[in-house]
Image 1 (cartoon, helix red, strand yellow):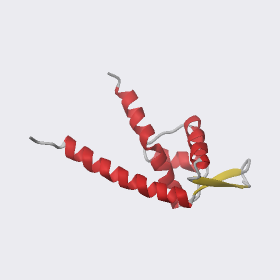
Image 2 (spheres, rainbow, N blue to C red):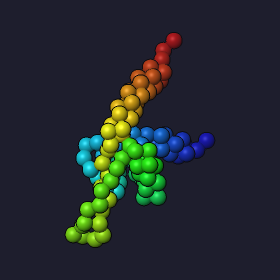
Image 3 (cartoon, rainbow, N blue to C red):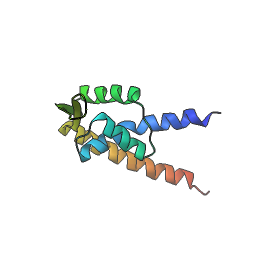
Image 4 (cartoon, rainbow, N blue to C red):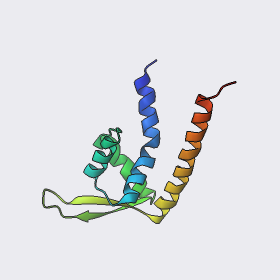
Length: 110
């Protein structure tokens, strides 16, 4: 069995949570998001990130604004919405429950 596929599926499952968590801290544009994810050992390509950001925006979890850049084209800065903050709070609770459950199961001793 190929572990790479399983690891990729696990990363995909938490990507929304990670993106919303990062953008909650401050407005970010795509390059900053990619760098922050990479620094966290969660490499993501633009082809994965852009559709996800669009989906989060269409769900009213994120919004964005354009800002001129001195080093190239204008940048789209994403910020979390109030609805996104509520959603993120729910994800944080679910994440903690998953951590607790997985720890209990993987450390189970009959």
